[in-house]
Length: 210
Image (tube, rainbow, N blue to C red; front, side, top):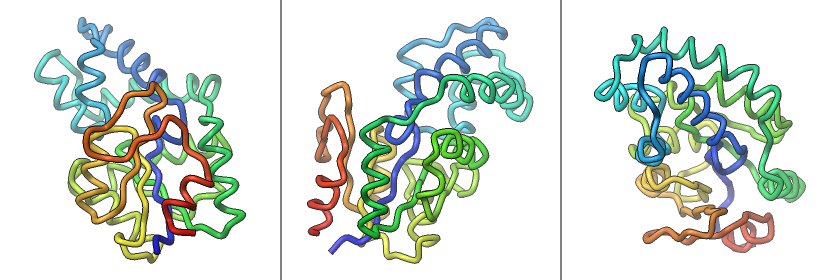
């Protein structure tokens, strides 16, 4: 029986991806590069380091630390003003806590940014273990971030269900030995994993065999 849930953060728990695209786009525009929808889609689920490397092949970017400082200068006020949790995911998290289900977050974002998002949306108090992409050696689709989250929960990866929205993240969770469910609120389907348009506690509990 599955006993824990490990969530991706961006695009699953919090509606941050449009804001992140806006923020990265504004910083890139200062360097003379227009972020495209294809860029954003190709890098969905990547760590900030990998995204910076991808874009460095296409634009004259500042070094990583300086680039991320520029990102953070926009990210913090924009998130504080506009970031919201997905209502379905927030409701599911609260209901799963009431059922005594341990939960973690395994994100490609930097730990500082993940903690900020969880605090702003009030979800952090329900999450036992958080792992950011800057805390592991290799980002998604490698399994490192999911394995670390399971380790911090003290639960075997095979006993965890991962909730993802990006194929890179789904590959990472699958490689970690977890059951994977994709949340695609736009109605698109994953070719390789079970897919839902919204996430509910009842669904997760049924997947867990409870």
